[in-house]
Each structure stands twice: as structure tokens, then as C-alpha cells.
Image 1: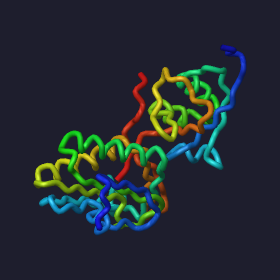
Image 2 (image 1 turned 180 degrees about the vertical axis):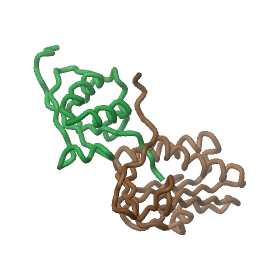
Image 3 (image 1 turned 180 degrees about the horizontal axis):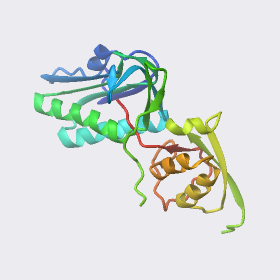
Length: 150
Length: 89
């Protein structure tokens, strides 16, 4: 019996399971399922990357993931089923850092909702990444400011 | 309200702020009824160098439930977090 909650969000130290992400979105009336997997890349801005460490303010992040899912359903339909999962800790090149999934009656809503989850997560979720380079150096990646003050 | 009474506020450090304290948290004292803007000033003084203070200018404060605005009162009963610019995925 599939999980009947309209969305599933998670932050975990365990490897992300894309099949489980899709299972959370399963609904008999949905003819479209869209899946996004973000992975650790081997080169960033010309530097050879060995691994990435993800730091997360977990409690706040779960709330923001839920908020983003609620917004997606407001935009593209309350019947959407959504999953948004992010990995915590040190990941090697090629490992999945984020999995987003959306299902809907038709592909247009599924594509748009899935993309919305990923784009909003990147701009709003309290997640930071520190790249570890082959030369032994490490750096925190610059990101999007959450503050509004002047 | 008695604004002379100081209250200790604990701020958890994330991302690039982690390098500035081990364990990654700093405590500052604020008058009762202080705003987030006052917290920002007190927190800047607690940071060890100008690089940290530059990072603070692009950072937000938050509870476990919400990102705070500059004129919000500091919820002194909560442990707060300082959030440098984010980059998930």
C-alpha cells in the first residue's frame, strides 16, 4: 500500500534511494512521474574534486522542504505527490546528494513541480557544501544569501 | 520592560562559520527585548576576524522553525543558528 501522504521529505546520512523516492509518489491516477538526481561532480570551476561534505541545519531544512512541497501543490495541483531528500555528510564523486520526485496526472505538472523543488531547495534550504580537492585543499562553496537586510 | 537585564543567547554555527569555534557555537549577551539587528552587532564582536564579519554581512539568523528578520525580537528561549549563504544539491 503506497504512503498516502502528499509529500515525503528527508535528510539522511544514508545513500539516497531513487526507487523509494518514486514509491512515495505512487498514485494510480498519475500518468507522469519525474525524477531528478543531483550528484557530486568531479570538476568544479576548473578544480578537480575528490569529495563534498554537506552541512545541514536539519530541523529548519525539513520545515523548508515541506514549505516548498506545499507551494508546488498550490501552483500545480493538490493531487501532486512529491518527494525531496538530501544527503548529509561526506560524499564521494558520483554519489547522489539530492533526489527530487514528482508525480501528477500529466507530464507538464510533474516536470514543473519537480524542477520547482530542486530550484527552490538550492536557493532556500539551509544546506552548505565544502568541496575537497585532489590537491588536498578544501573550500566552502559560495551560495545564495538568505538575509534581507541592507 | 527592563532593558538593562542581559540574557545569554546561544548561536549554532554552520557552513564556513564552523571554523570559528569548536564545538561550533558562540554565546552572546543581549538586553531583554533585543532585536535580531542587535544580535547581529553583538555576534560580530564575538567573531575572531574580519573575514568572519564579512561572511556575517551575507548571513541570516534563524530558529529551528524560521529565518528571522532584522527587526524581529530575539527568541531568547531558543537556540539560534547563523546561516551563511546556502548551496544545496
